[in-house]
Structures are given as structure tokens and as C-alpha cells.
Length: 355
Image (cartoon, rainbow, N blue to C red; front, side, top):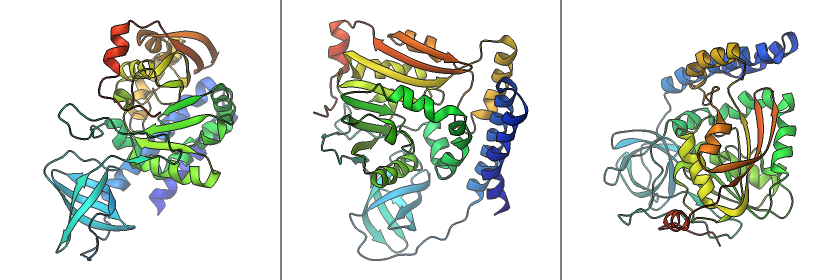
């Protein structure tokens, strides 16, 4: 209990830094506090010992979510209870993946992986089929592991940034969205209330536990959104599918930001827009060096604080139409650079189209 209070309290205590020092000094100290909270949470997570159910009939074909997994066995959560589980075959599973129960034998469920798709908006979003004909599975990702671990306290850790004008930045950026919209890295669904009326929203996140919280928030806010689990580096959509693609504080955490932004460029329409809210490496060499030194710590909780997302977006084939720069924050409006026909044709092969 004391450790949990520290995990939740450190970011709040860190808020006091902003009341005493200017932003350029307080932000690195606050991020260091977040990193310490992440280390404590990781220790707590690894040390957890939860009771596991020992068997029950009637479990076949029920959905479950992986809690922990190593080699071909682990623990899954099914009907709000924890069960021992083994996999059907030897798929790579990570915490947060969805599985279906095949049968129960003695104390263990036998499960197989499935895609995780919600489609309350009736948009027909589907997972892409791999070349071998099997359903595309979310690849092992450092970002998925970190955010599945932090999902239960993520909103608490992020709250001080919201109080410091973060909500206004989100509203300003997302208020420009229109038409069919894809939000990559939707997380816990914090942005759901910021979109203009009339958009047709699809939300994607690599972390199953974050996505579960987004589903609950969507129901609470009565927002129509199609939610699915997926990786921005391998988007399961045909080329030129969306009028708008959005992301807020996502490409600081993506394992391959250049690859992810290239995928964003592929799925946005030629006349569409990409709306980004990101924090970047400070331009000052002193604070830039400080952020470089702090990044290995902040990576424990998710973000890398020394990325140059403006330049990465341009390298991925996006033209920056407008950029609002305030401190380390960037509000970016971009559009895809003219594509060659071969690129657009190749990008859409084997992908699903949410029409």
C-alpha cells in the first residue's frame, strides 16, 4: 500500500516544482519524478502474487486477456478471475493480448490468440491478414509492455500535464479533425471528448489494458468510436483511407517513430491532414543535453523526451503546413507529400478497408 501511494503521489508532488521554478527547470525535475514512480511501479508489478482460480466448467469459447506470459504458459483473466493458461501452439503473447478459451483441463485453460476489435460505429474495421493467411497478431513491443504495466495509473501520472494547459492544446489540435478520423495511440481515451461532432472515429492502441480503459470511457461519454488493438508501425488499413489522422503524445513512445509516421502518411488521403501534439527535445543545448541524460529514465515510464518529431515527420513524407511552438511542445498540422502511384498501390495490398 505504501509503495502504491508513492507511485501515485510522486507525480503530484512533482507538480510543486512548477510553482517554484520556471518551466525549463521544473519540467526535467517532474519527468525525473515520473521515472522514479515508473521504477517503483515496475518493482511492484513484478512482485505481485495474485491468487489463481483452479478450475471451472463452461469456460469454452469465452474471451480472456493475458496478464502474464512466458514461453507457452502464463496467467489470463477471464470473467474477472485469474486462471493458469497454456497456448494452442506456440504464439508470441504479451500482457494485454486477447485470447479465446478452447477448453479447461484440471487447473489450466487452453487458449489461442485472437484479434481485439470493437466496432460500435458499424465501420467494419478488421485486422489485416498476414501473407501466410493467419490473422495478424500484435508484435512484441517495448511500448506495449510499458503501457500495459502503467495502464492502471496512467491518467494519474499524466494529470499534472493536463492541468498545465495540456487540455487546451489537445482541444486546439483535435478541433481541426474532420470526416473519417483515425487516432493512433488512443490510450485510455482521454481525447474522446475533444473531437468535433460528426466525425467518424477509429481509435487504435498497441496496449490492450489501455484500450480497455478507452472502451469504458467511450461508454461513459456515449461516444461512438471503433476501437481496436494494433501497432502504428503496421497499420491494418488500406492506403488513403482516412480524412484525418491524429496523435497526441504518441511518437515520443513509439519504438520506430519514422516507421510509424510513414504508416500514418500511407493511410491518410492525399488531400487529408495529419494532426500531431508532441513534446520534443529542447532547442537549448544545455537543456537538450539534460533531456538526453534523462531519457533512459523516462523511457521506463514510456516516453523519450529528446526526440525531434518535426524532422522525423518530414523524413516520413509529411509536409508541415503549420507548427505552433511553445517551449518543448509542438502542435503540428501536416499533409502527405505527393505520392507516387506505385507507393499507394503497394501500401494497400492485403489491408482491410473500414468503409
